[in-house]
Length: 267
Image (cartoon, rainbow, N blue to C red):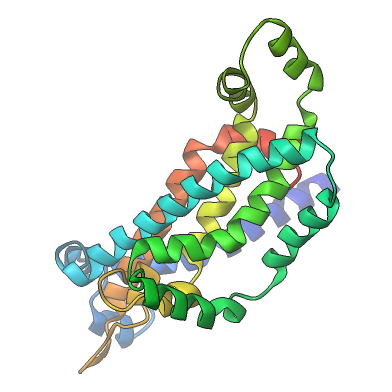
């Protein structure tokens, strides 16, 4: 009996989580007059005009590609920097290593608003303002410490004897690192990529401050949907549905690594 009640509780919780998603999808296939007209559990007159507007309006699809661009750049830069750093922290002991590791985490603890003015002035002076690279580099300040912290736990779990065996066999360090160490770290890399993507994809304050028009991300575009007739609820809902899809795709492709990473890594 208790087990049955636990199952029903889990089902109700899942239903509670899925209800907003269902409502978002239902709004995305409605006209504004139907959305504002009254409560409809099932759309009476479904339409795909809202999705057509998002795919054909440059203000929408360019913002979507801008978000994908800086998220991809940020994830690639973060993992490229964090992997060697995690290996160094897990294998070597040097003066100030613990203090440096703690300092990295303190950067992650600081609110993004603290760094807005320095980033804005710096990027404006060197011509990086309103570019995807500017947002990607700014996000690295927060994603790199998290990535180093996660990957260091995975790197510490790799036996040191593997390093010694590779050296005894005559392999160079670069061969060991890229051919042996990185494949073993697939689970950690998958978890790290997931968290980097999630932070960079949903972050709004830095992305909104460091962009104007050319590199405006989808999260910023969704806050500027006010027209002469008011909010375009249907188009806004359609854009919201599309912003969920990249996250679903990332989870799908790294799902096996995520399961292993959450079980073994420092998450």
